[in-house]
Length: 173
Length: 173
DNA sequence: ACCCGATATTTCAAATATCAAATATCGGAG
DNA sequence: CTCCGATATTTGATATTTGAAATATCGGGT
Image (cartoon, rainbow over the protein chains, first blue to last red):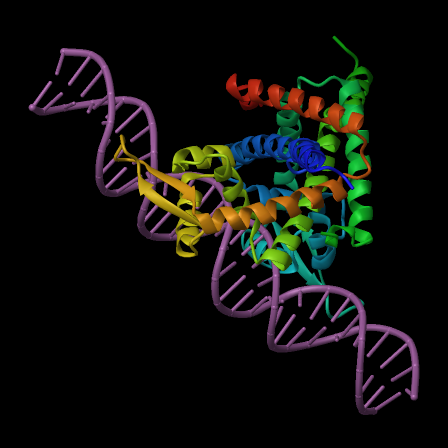
């Protein structure tokens, strides 16, 4: 049996080094979020000012750029990691603007292929060049080796998160 | 005067080693985005399922948690890196739910302080614990040293981006 | 052929987000 | 004190986003 004094000490120690227990993960996550919000706001602003383009539309076009024949809405929504309904609305507006077109899939009457129109492709190419240059400026403070390290760590982190999700471990309270 | 053949070679070389020129930055940025989207979607889901809470509301509460007396809408919007109008709407809804309260600032009649209600504070504390545990599971694959490295690199990257923004370098086409 | 669970998309309501314009107040220069 | 540029917030229009439900089609088993 432990003495009352010992119990108090345990509790205090625990509360101190605990305070939550996962400080490092939280700080890392918050820092990642604030960095990406900063970069994103800049890209958003430049796209708007220089090309009258929104970031979601640009992202969608970027997905389509390498798919000559286009891809289904489903594949788009998976790659963009957004919901189906979201992509439907985005595509609707972009079709109206002539940036992409929708056509029935040949084999499967449930699905539609979306692809860049020549206009969309042409516009995207101009934007992509500028986008790359903006990123280069924003990441200017990192050298090649640091970027490589960060790539590797992000890959590892992503793997980790994927596994946790697949195993349903995030459910553990 | 260069020969036609030389011109062709130049153009080809340029196009090849160029192709954009900033591949590393782009890949790093995309990887960071996909990782954060993955983590975010998990946190969003757990908040909804376990606490009927949305991520924006949780983020707002997290900002208020350490400010006993609350803070102005302006400070909130800066910290959350979202627009003023966005915060106005969020606070409106959260006041209606009794999670936060709004009161006039004592000195400055333009501004209002927002702070957690006792109910909001109590709820946030439960959620924050779970949130930390979710993050710990998601980041499980990184050891302490790797997290530290990533923290440092993100700090450096953020500095870099800040400087670029401050100097208006992102404007360079 | 018919049923049925799975897949692809759309629809709908509500929330979130941006941007621009409007409103209110502040605080200092003259 | 008054004007005026700066600051704090709200408002309104529109776009984006989610989550859930509805619709349509697929494809295998019977």
